Amino acid sequence: MNKKTRLGRGLDALLTNNENLQSLQEVLQNIDIELIAPNPNQPRKKFNKEELLTLTESIKIHGLLQPIIVTPTKYPSTDKKYILIAGERRLRASKQAGVKKIQAIIRDSTENKNFELAIIENVQRENLNPIEEALAFKKLGEKYHLTQEEISKQIGKSRPVIANSIRLLDLPESIQQLIESNVISAGHARLILSIQNNEQQIEVAQIIQKKKLSVRDLEKFLLIFNKENKIDKNTVVDPDINALESEFIKIFGTSVKININKKNIGNIRINFHSIDEFEGILEKMKSSNGGKL
Image 1 (cartoon, helix red, strand yellow):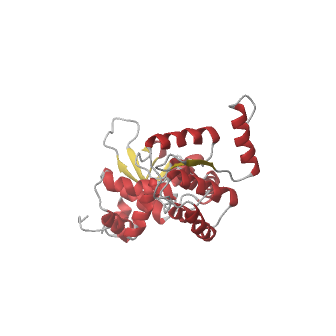
Image 2 (spheres, rainbow, N blue to C red):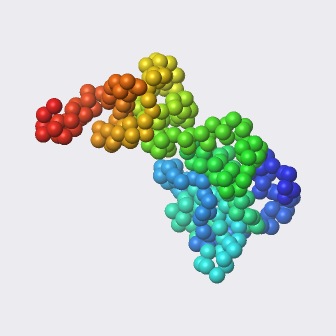
Image 3 (cartoon, rainbow, N blue to C red):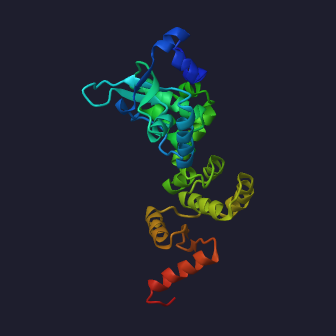
């Protein structure tokens, strides 16, 4: 393939690689399913069990309608002769269906191209959750030295979309987990990124989860929240204070903010979002003080 050719044309264009249909058919083979190793660079980490079961039943009845893509392994001495490039869900479902041989397109490919193909297939099929997609885009940039503009052209998405996707990785780990679990959406997450303080980000994520706020509801909520949490210019930012906040967060399981100004006057705010959570905080205070407040 010419180096200037971009992958944004889609997976089908990549598979044909400017070859005619006859040559494509020549590399389409039925191969032993046990000879295929999973793609170590697979960007998709989670597979929906129900969807996988549905595909398994479909394969049992109708067979595999679209071949997977593999490349010969560089280490033929192992028990695996091929590495999967695209089609891991189809491969898993075929194994569950008891398939012994699977239809596959065998093609030579570099590790870089393997990863690009895996990303493109998953992005086009909307298989990746927002965090998996962000990690994949980040890896294309860091490991394969592609700019966001180059990733944009290869994946077929605009550069701002790529940039906003990667920014999700700036969020605290707990919020990323909520995104992966589909508790909050990428739309929610982008609004949370407008909050500079990590503890406040976590607080807002908890509110979204408990109050089941829509993205539109969150926009309205943040207008009030940002005004109420505007940082006082006289507030001193102290790393020791940040460390104390982190300790309190571990104790109470909710966001805690310590504000101290230059005159050493301030306050501690412990946030809760329900009566049950408030009572839990009181119990923790009592237990640390011999059962008394």
